[in-house]
Length: 618
Image 1 (tube, one colour):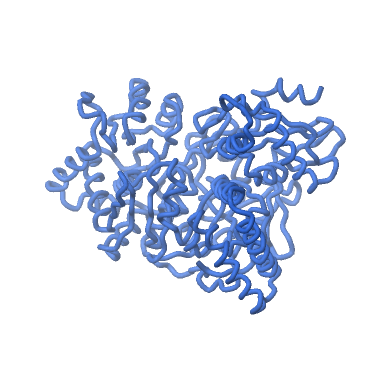
Image 2 (cartoon, rainbow, N blue to C red):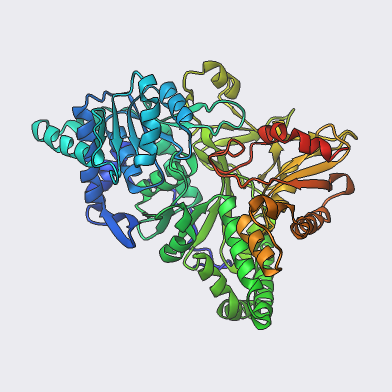
């Protein structure tokens, strides 16, 4: 772990560390250069299995050969419907090595969504993880005339399956071995035929405002962005990464898979989404990219553990985090750290902060990266007080991921940093909308030229829909989404994300939506953190029978009211939340109210709970 005052190990890397102008060219160069070094690790049945670059290359070559034997042509699309597992990466790289287009589908998507995404992308081959995902594919297969084959990663429970259009990944590799024995060099030839400007991947937007749109990214854009990312969050072959976010989302695809491919950092795959807290402590990543929901969850875990500790332990933590906070304040102000304060921090680490970092699993982290959604500045400061630099990046599907990033040498909580060196970022002088231009910006939306024209203007500027400000140092700050800004009945402009982020800093609140457009005051729809609120109820002997009854107890309502009052103190009177209600359904990514990235869909929530909202204004 690096100290906040010694960031020599968190420096950008500007040189090209791996040649290749397409993803397959980079990958095969990496295999040639790194050979027996370990790249991928995955835990199954309690045992970690390692994949060297050579082993990965062999698997990718065989899968690609299998695809070629099935007649998979350049430019055709293959979709991957799976959780984040090593086979996802193997399939992705095999498709790209064939000159194909790789598309990811969220494993939480319903069969109807699988149908839409496969039809829109003209999917010819569909990779699925297991029997659960296969059921969705079989349900819609008859409506997909272009779908030729379904490939299953894990055949457990499917040994007796008799479907001519379904094949296991193992059998596909067997086909590939036979094909390549007769056509040696066929995969390499396909890879060499790929041009940088060719379409490489599709990343579908989460669809918060209508049907998902397929953002098209070229090989050139992906390679350019991977090299650029290394100037924001530099890593190398000695780094350990954790791969757990959905690979069909741009954050893990670009900032995880492709960046690790470029830099050689090891990718460790978690067992499943439920084992993330346990696996992160085992892996102890040295570079850790996650979304705010994960950072909030880790913080909540430490706060709950602290409540169960002795008074002496609580006092030790309070003193230690106070020392860390003083150092964080000086680092943010660019002031030197005295020897006395450094000594205090060493003591604070020994008596409390080391344990907090180990409880989370960030005790080896050189730095942590947060992105994909807004994060509370207080949460960033807390991680800094633990002694871990927390760098916020900002971007979107259409920009290939991060377009701005906070440098470790100048951390400003609440800021998304200056424009990354590989693209231009500016504010629209009229609306304050953030605009981005660069090679990292996507090619457009598949089959939707009119939507592409709306997004990218004649001068090549992408209109992001985010409204922001820029300070004298060139650091940007997001104030809100253009369509989300609230104007109250009294004419007050309110940016709901600021209030929502403060609420989500509470260990008892998972998400929140602020209501108030054209209304006399602000109200909130709140989703509680089930685990932490249940523990609160159990510790207080508060009776409840299920999740819904938990949200209706007087004590829980009082708990959330106290959290709202804490937040209200930070805002002007007209920006304070007057009333709230708790969602009484435990939502998952499979529910329509949530995007696959676990964000509440504001418009849908407002529509679905219109009666409850109106009741707060009676």
